Figure 1 (cartoon, rainbow, N blue to C red):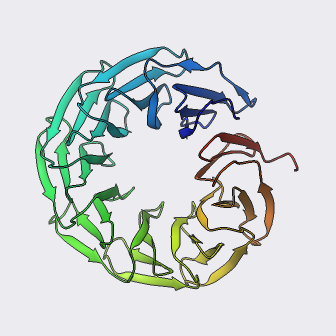
Figure 2: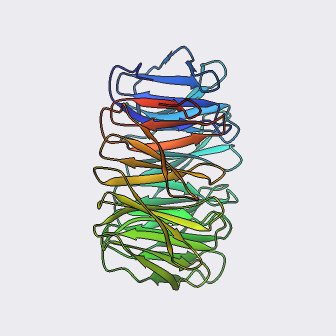
Figure 3: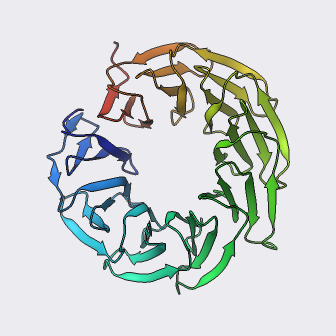
Length: 372
């Protein structure tokens, strides 16, 4: 899958994982049908895609950032442009659909977050208040709030129905990343060289500072069941916090260099860490026991992803390969070669043992049922 003529900047699956869309600096988006591994005829866009492509929850629309400070929405079935969201005065950094797909939020370098009606393409609200670029916007699980994170060190909560400001979350001094619990009305935030914080939005609104690491955080994420939050750090460790209390319940050590990322298994029972020491480790969440040390990569391991059923693990490395591992045995069962640069991201498809990997030049789809 190397049809683009310039760097592939982003890729994403449709909700049913039967379509893969890539955006590129060659001014096109391309839609690939994974079931038959053939590329759907390319759809030339009015302006070059820039940054992430995001599917609506029902998979009917595809939204992506463009140059000229706009966001375009396209009908996946026909390739027709449904609407162009025009209103920002600087680059758009992120796009997010509400859980029900009725509205869309964009964040921009113009220090605002905008909320759009998906059906009409009209701007419903312009959320102003940040004093620096807004880098992210995320919806609450029930879709009633959008939270914007900014380089001004704050997050702001906005009411979707009215667009009114509800609250400013302070406690960081640099660019803030925020993410919601999948099951609770709890927001977690973290920033460069600063601790992670929990904000109880349903209770008293107070915050907890999550402690336990001595280095800079490289990633934070909730477990799929919403009970735990894991972190990875430059201090060579990973840790697990209780999402209800904010207390550190487990710290796992074993890596000899910084840990770049961590990920929970679909059942929330395992945690995988990826490190600059060229290894990944599979940890048992309940005990903190290291089940397997995955050794095969020749350069730092950047990230990993579980297959939907949790039986396989894919690890991505700066050595230009993606490796597949049997989670139960820790055995490397496949090495996916052919990338031209470090492998940045990977996603499994439920469509019969297929997965996609993206490097800085191209997006590759692999049929895992075929031997090398």
